[in-house]
Image 1 (tube, rainbow, N blue to C red):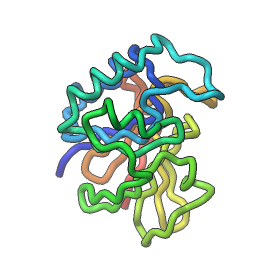
Image 2 (image 1 turned 135 degrees about the vertical axis):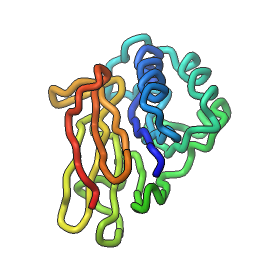
Image 3 (image 1 turned 180 degrees about the vertical axis):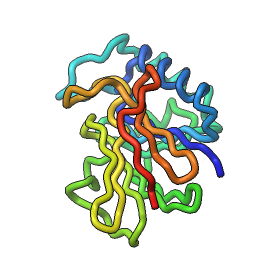
Image 4 (image 1 turned 60 degrees about the vertical axis):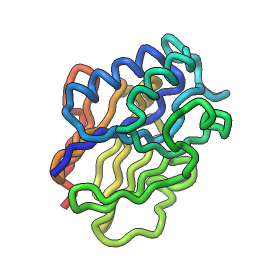
Length: 182
């Protein structure tokens, strides 16, 4: 089985993009799955630390062959012109380690607006900047939190899927939440 890392809401922070990519390299994950809001901070967010979208573009493009990404509400068509991996899909259906994931940003489908899924499927999204790992009825809901602008008193976080277990970690390697997806 492969290992996957999920991250969301970089919002143009070169500082946190570097931390995220360092965590990705250390994790040994086979793919980095980005859940939107990569380059811009949006009108409701303060500028994140080291706001430098051009640096983020350069760093992410180095990993273009390892990234799956979906569009967030702060991502625009113009972003696709500078990013060398597909970004404009609102969601992706991913089969990972025998599990079906509905990966999306979260501004349309989220824990309060579940898309049509089968029993045992996993909805993974960002957008709220609040980490979440829970079984909800016959489904699982994951949110890796935010890489750069966490909310709800949480630290900056990301998630790793290893076998059928999802862990949400901070950049010090502390496990914030853990959930078996079967």
